[in-house]
Amino acid sequence: MKRILLGVTGGVAAYKSAELVRLLRKQGAEVQVVMTQSAMRFISPLTFQALSGNPVHTELLDADVENAMGHISLARWADALLIAPATANTLAKLAHGLADDLLSTLYLAATCSVYVAPAMNQAMWNKVVTQENMQAIRRHGVRVIGPEQGDQACGETGYGRMAEPSVICTQLLANDEVVSQLTHQCLIGHKVLISAGPTCEPLDPVRYLTNRSSGKMGYALANAALNAGAEVTLVSGPVALSAPIGVDLIKVTTAEDMYQAVMSKVTTHSIYIGAAAVADYSPVLSQSEKIKKQDEQLTLVLQKNKDILADVSARMDRPFTVGFAAETHDLENYARDKLTRKNLDMIAANWVGQEQGGFDSEQNALHVFWPGGDKSLPMTNKTLLAEQLIALIVEHIKVV
Ligand code: C5P
Image (cartoon, rainbow, N blue to C red; front, side, top):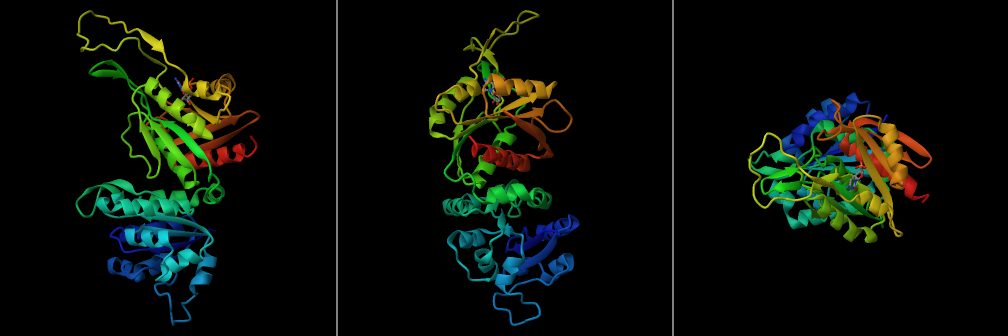
């Protein structure tokens, strides 16, 4: 059974943490709750006591010996410390090592994995100092879940909503092995280059050829690599996603743009993950004026684009090179063929065009192949899947 120490800080999202306790316990976890003074103004400790089945801890210097485990023994007890919601104030304290209440002291005393689920107004989240604090926290090995984009309690819209309890619960409990590997900052010192999303190949000023890639897998990989301590460059086609804080984002449109961007960066990176759905062909001519409707049939002449992945892996100074294979049939054969033909270190194959998973879905499953082995990563959310793939890459760069 996993022992979770849940820190609740003073944000309006504190009410969601009650549901979080319920979900964690339903999954078999034992939960103890620590609340800050301001959290108790949003929600009563009694709620958490009832839901966790344990007394709630609120004081650093607690005279009530029966309830007082002491911050050191409480920290030792936990398999994971999760702070949800984590306010800007608490995150700032974590970033700087302040320990002026029970929760911030516990954080310093904790040797287990630590997760935070930030929640705050979007302007507070976007403030430079908050982002600098987030970078510091990540560097210190804390794993960050969310925040999400959407409507906020204050009436504004943007990034800052706490991740949903179900998402937090899944990320926390799903894969202890991966979690412990990543929290050890196994990619410190590595620079990871990731391509993500679709490319758009213009036909004329108003039309283009593209595909259904959402970029979610590539962005999740960028996040997982950051969490593992890497410096990350993300070359992204047009997507409706915000890049994780701390990545160097290069926005591109066409396959040729993506090729140029990747090639200009590849020599300074130790790992390349080609998660983009690069157009295989683009129009020979992009018309400068809108193509008029005329004949019954219209023929487009397309030319093959350069293969970024193959060109990266053909370099003498190549990074550890990982490709993706999205297929509608004969997945394993095509994936193995690509692994050899493009001379890759690893390839992650997934079905597309299926009811669940693949393009534009929150979920996916991967079958990963490398020379001499393979591993199946079952259907789960892309955040978790990305962490598993990063963990596999870490295992293999060790032996390269
Ligand atoms: O050969 P195929 O396009 O199916 O291979 C998919 C893999 O190759 C993906 O990793 C994709 O990012 C990469 N790719 C590329 N450049 C292209 C086409 C695909 O890097 N022009």
